[in-house]
Picture 1 (cartoon, rainbow, N blue to C red):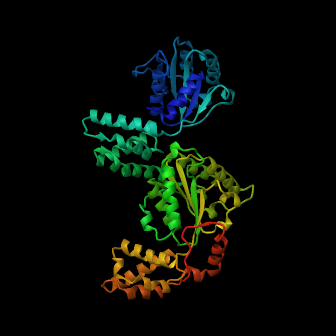
Picture 2: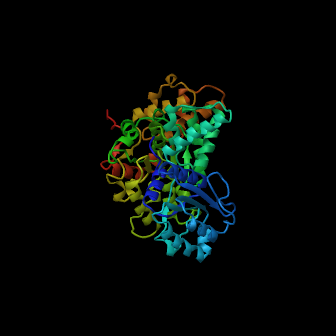
Picture 3: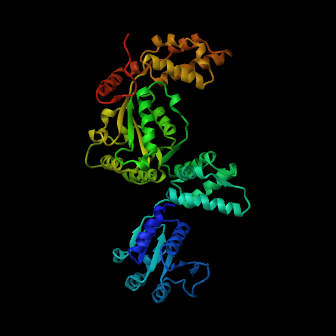
Amino acid sequence: MKQSRAIETLQDAFESGRPLIYIHSAEEHRIDRLLRTVAFGCFEPPLTVFEWALTTGLRDAAGSSAAAGLHEPRKLLDFIAEYPGAAVFHLKDFHEPLREDPAVRRRLRDLYELCFDRKKFLVITSAVQFIPEELARNILLLELGLPDAEELQSLLRDETAILRQLGQPVELDDHYLLPLARALQGLTIDEARHAIRRALAHHRMLGSEAIPALLEEKRLVVNRTGLVQYVADGTTLDYVGGLEILKQWLLERRKLFQMRDQLSADIVPKGVLIMGISGCGKSLSVKAIASTFELPLYRIDMTEIFSGRHGPPETAFAQACKILEQISPAVCWFDELEMAVTSSESSGEQGRMFAFFLTWMQEKTRGLFVAATANRIDLLPAEMIRKGRFDEVFFVDLPTDDERVEIFRIHLQRRGVDPSKFDLERLKRFTKGWTGAECEQCVVSALTTAKLEERALTDDDLLNATATIVPLSKTMKEQVDHIREWAFERAVRASPREVVR
């Protein structure tokens, strides 16, 4: 089986002969297991692994005390200096002794020379990153990152084996091993373990039916940050009225995205920008993209980013993008992009966010498909919409006559009403220039009237409801006309052009 990225990183560090390694991570138990895997599997003879903490002192692989009186950091380093064999010493939360004691820092500089080329490694792990300036060139800093699919597949096998030993009748469907691991990506090992056990509490088989439970655990973890929101909607392309060109494009790109690991990076779909008039189905289309690609959907909360609760907006925005990288594969939704990144200036918060976003779009992981929406694409800088950032820029116009009929059918069906009992063709003349949202509101208004009178919905209810709605194309005529005129030759239409009869 292919090695995980974490094991390859640690193996490279050890094989390069770096005696001092600092791993910035809070996952101590995971790191301990990875160190043992590398020490036992990549060296001949295997290396001994010791573990030190201020509360327990130095312990060997069996958990027994390696020597008395080694709770003090300075005495521990003296012991390591005198230890005759090859070994890995895992030092937990050693950033405090580094920060407080100059003698410890001096001793570590001595150990760099004493341990070099002797297969003796000091691995400091801490959730806090602190490397003194005098040791900056001696210590290798590693950002281990969250577990990848290979490591999570191993966890799935281990957890099912452990639960079987405890007498629980659980099964793992090997056919769904990779999809299950991908559903867990973005979680720490401990969080993934809780998610697995949560899924097994409802299903004794870890298969396709367990994936929603794993995604629910991820939703709880991701939403906790406040910067990224998990959107569980379930909207499919069948719920989107019209937009046939956009639908066909998505169905074609779905195949390429699912083959992303076998294709070159320039062929793998990066994302799509959907602009158009408010209420015409941009957000609905993004939700349908996630279900079409069979991926979870995450939305960047720009209000939270600009709130100041997570530090400067550009820092919070970079953190949100990093979270998205960690939880890939996924569809990432940037809503009303022009409100977040509208400055072309070289200075200021928005300028820095804009520069970061451009770089990130170019270099992000291939497991992320970005779906951005904008009402006023003319407010976006040219660098944002040039080819290479997004695969395509679609314009969602006011629905055509036939599309409005289809939208009425969809909203009637979603509310349990048979659309075949209505003459929806009559509505074309009365709903000219309507958005999809206004068609939906017409159905809701007509159903409300019928429900209040305790009777079934009729054609007259729908026709009467059209008289109470003033469409956006009239109330904001100048703005709507400006958007349509701007996009006429600058974007690909999401719908075929209406044939004028």
